[in-house]
Length: 362
Image 1 (spheres, rainbow, N blue to C red):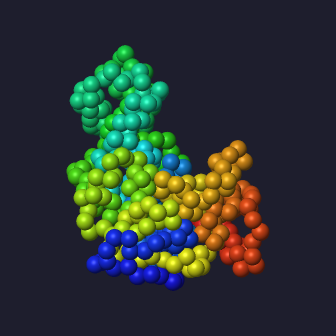
Image 2: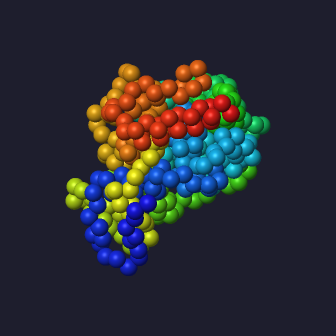
Image 3: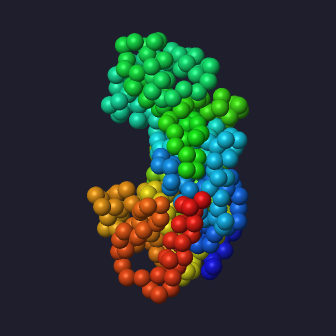
């Protein structure tokens, strides 16, 4: 890996970064240039969680980053409560470490508040006072977890003027509720069963430190602008958080805008090779910047989002989104490639397809 080492003590505008420098630096920090032997829990922590509203993508994300990834490590983590699933960043379900589950939900509550105000599903229950609802929810879950549908029905006993479905969704966006296993476990199915995350993990909620969270984001996704941090988290006001962090260094992006980074962050040179990787329908590597151009371009994003590609998984070649694939009859099958592959890329793609096939067989 070719890298430009950037350390503490440098002044602002340390490096004028190209788009390709940003691409390779992001891939390197995401462990998509070279797999690592880190434990699954440590990778989930490093990435500050994995988007997980669909079951398969987080497993594909981990398999693309870890050598000898064991998908049952996620199952064990969910069962031993070292991992958890709940709504956090951008108002989406994430697979998180227990510490992050107890912290990020409070930090990202403004995302859920926006959803509460905008959701047509929640609207029939919006008149309910927060403290009254919290008490009713705590009582409903006091004897144990409940399926989402049943939770709404139990809450309807306290709020008969609101539909059970609206009450269940109000609980989802106003309270820190974990989705319990087998939901999210490898090759297991199950409906949404909910419990307060602190009650499920048997630990108190933790107070978030916004600056510490931003530093972790930068270590996994940086360098980045304040708009990027906002796109990743779903929160506003990131400029004031960054302004309170004099330990950060500042680079200049290809558009001349300021990009912030941790002082010991390594900038990976644009000429560093990037291997073929197969990722899922969603992966935070392309969902965590205001402009997603570091690893995708608008035309190819449109193919991914369109009728033919919207539910497809993604093929990355030379660090960019260049194709789509699906699981058919339990095996990975390339649906479309957006350009011709070199001999080396075809060999790497075949190797990655075999790796994913082995994963799916487990």
